[in-house]
Amino acid sequence: MKVTLRKVGNSFEIYVPKKDLEEKVVFAEKPGLWGGVIRIGNGWSFQMPDMPADTPMPITVEARKLADDED
Image 1 (cartoon, rainbow, N blue to C red):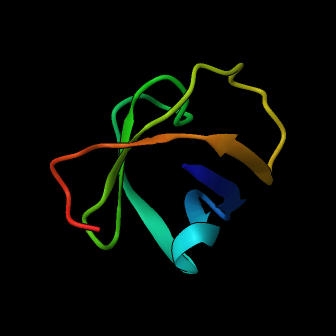
Image 2 (cartoon, rainbow, N blue to C red; image 1 turned 60 degrees about the horizontal axis):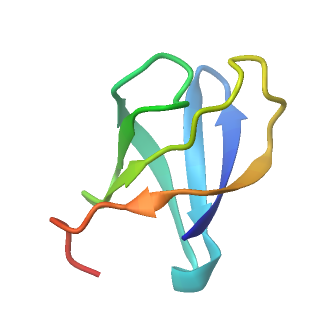
């Protein structure tokens, strides 16, 4: 699923165009988001792609929505 990430102050926000959803990232398995699982404000979780820590934002990436969450 395509998602757009941006940094807002010291936190991150995600936009999911397919669902017209914008939420804050409330948990990141790894610092900087890349290569781990993140959870957003509505409870959804995504497996993020591996990318360099200095990847400029905002950026649109392909992230895998984890199946244990509702649509």
